[in-house]
Amino acid sequence: MQKKNNRQSSDKNTKSGTEDTSKLSWNDSKEEKLSDFMSDFGDKMDQDYDEYTGDEQLKTRAGEEYPDIFKDGKMKLVDDSDKDADEGESIDIGWDPELKKKYDYQVVSIFNYNGDDAEQHITYLFCVHDNQPIVLVDQTTNENYIAVKETANKDVKTGFADIINVDDTDDD
Image 1 (spheres, rainbow, N blue to C red):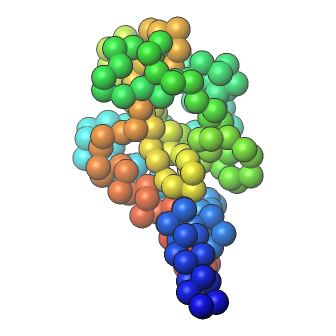
Image 2: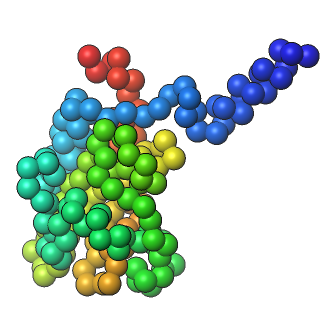
């Protein structure tokens, strides 16, 4: 009887996001792999992505400056049914490559492509949410809020998940 209860407890931990056993992490090696991935992805899409390196703000064609834009608290999560960012849900998001802060969306890496047209940009925010990898995309042009949604691009989602889910012991 005791064994059964332990097993149920163990199964419950596994289903609830495995916070205790397999917490995601981010490091320079993973950032380098993501940088290589985004370079290849950009070549494939005929887009040149700039990476936020921590030196200077990453500025989009629409005038947003990452990661400072997170401090404004004007970021909303939208989906395809939302007509604009005002309809989305405000989110707690911030720059946190060490995954030590308490944001709901911990941004570990940012890449931006500025298009040729006024305000055209694609900004990928590589995040951890509920101990799961998620890639949000910002293509906001002129709103009161910054609208982000989970990217529909399967290559980007899978590429990030593959990189962040690598055990750190494999990177050494």
